[in-house]
Amino acid sequence: MWSNRFARSFVSVLIFITILLVSCQEDVYPTDNEQLSHEEQIVIRFSHVVGENTPKGMAAVKFAELIKERSNGHVEIQVFPNGVLYKDGEEMNALLRGDIQMIAPAISKITTLVPEWSVMDLPYAFKNADEVHTYVNSDVGQSLMTKLNAHNLFSMGVWDSGFKQFSNSIRPIETVQDLNGLRMRIMPSDVLSEQFSIVGAYPKRIDFNTVFHQLQRGNVDGQENTLTNITSKNLHSLQDYLTVSNHGYLGYLLLMNHEFWNSLPEDVQTLLIETLKEVQEWEWQLAENLTAERLEEMEACDCIKIYNLSDEEKEEWESAFEPVYRYYAENYGKKYIQALPKNQSQH
Image 1 (cartoon, one colour):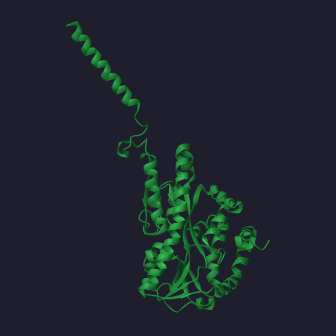
Image 2 (cartoon, one colour):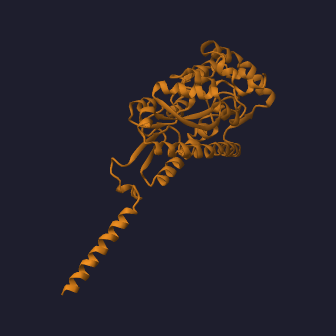
Image 3 (cartoon, one colour):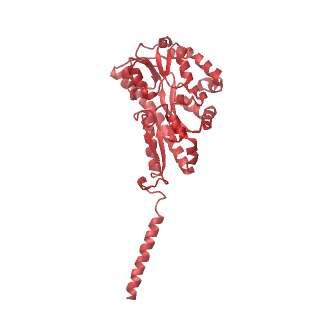
């Protein structure tokens, strides 16, 4: 009897020790994020206004997947594309209110808060994306990033869309004079407005999500955008002429609500920054590849007449837009213009 009781007790102790050892080996957070409580899981709502088949749309999904995987579901990035959560003109206010935690607006849209950022909108300011990245990472570029902090914004990086092209439904645009009299959709930027005004065009500030309908109704004649954005919204189906001008860079700032950022644990901040650096490199290459693919598709579809500006013509266009640089210098100073890569070679 005594030996039986001892055996039962010994087995019970073994079971208890086994359970204790297994529990000590468990991860801090369950691998299944559905098991996490609301207090344990960190949710970041990421709203943007372009299609999922664009460089930004695809990068947002990749970023969310990597963060979920690397945090075992502890951090979840919820991506809301195409303006389904907040429209073009709404997402910044939603971010500042804390209704969402992350957005990736076009740099032009930041200029209403920090007008100095409109240096990025200057026509022919950059020859390629590498020059853009060099500029943003320079001391001057980082000083622009710092200016965002005063508006409760924390910048985490830059994603490319590419370089903008002109399209319209009235006539081919081969010279700057061909823009005269055209009603052109622009993003909210005084520099972009000046760009069109000095050549006799009529700039119209219109949210991206409504551009298709505005073109369809004939409220504007044309627009400027990257090839991936033009095709993602099928804008070229409403336009007769496309000019491959590469006249201006279009990129996105990865912005987070600064208060929310400061509330995150240091290890989560590190995870987000390191992952974004990786995704940023991937997105830059993707943007370049997709731009080339979209141009080939548009050339093959024979659905719009395409004119490619020569290098000589681009130089003529750049000279014609020189007053836009004077406008910027008079309003925001020469510091950011002088730091442009094309001006560095002159020193």
